[in-house]
Amino acid sequence: MTDLTIYKNDYCISTDKTKLDLKTIHSFLSTKAYWCLNISYEAVKKAAENSLNFGVYNDNKQIGYARIISDFSTIAYLGDLYIIDEHRGKGLSKWLMETIVSHSELQGLRRWILLTGDAHGLYRQFGWTDIANPALWMELHNRNVYSK
Image 1 (spheres, rainbow, N blue to C red):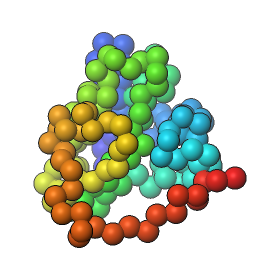
Image 2: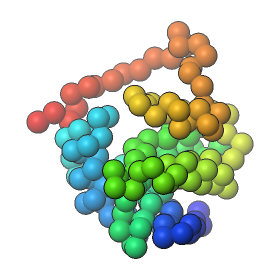
Image 3: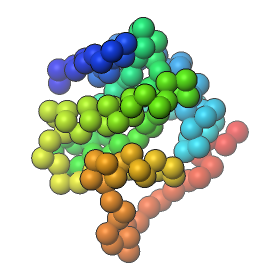
Image 4: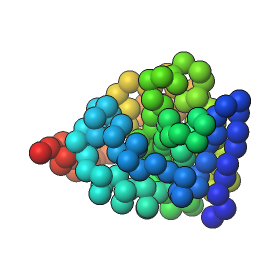
């Protein structure tokens, strides 16, 4: 898979894994992301190694992130999307979503899925809806997996 790098004003989005600042990503996810508080560095690193990653950068400093888990044929899961507080309100989340959904390896998928507690408005702009028939879905969820 060829890496994608695009620029807009003073910002960059890249899928190049060598650019990822895993310590910064871990710091945000483990302390500020309600969905994975206390996640270990090792778990963040392993997740990044096995995902299509989208890093968001300002002056080569990691300021945002998202990752895709996919078979690149039928389904994709969008997770860990964030922009740090100092850079919010500049349209970066929307630009990141535009970049993700237009990525050449993520076209023609039957289903995209995600979990969100507070960003429904962002995702609805890209056609996401509530699950049409939640009775069909099941999960095995360990809420305390990252507890110390």
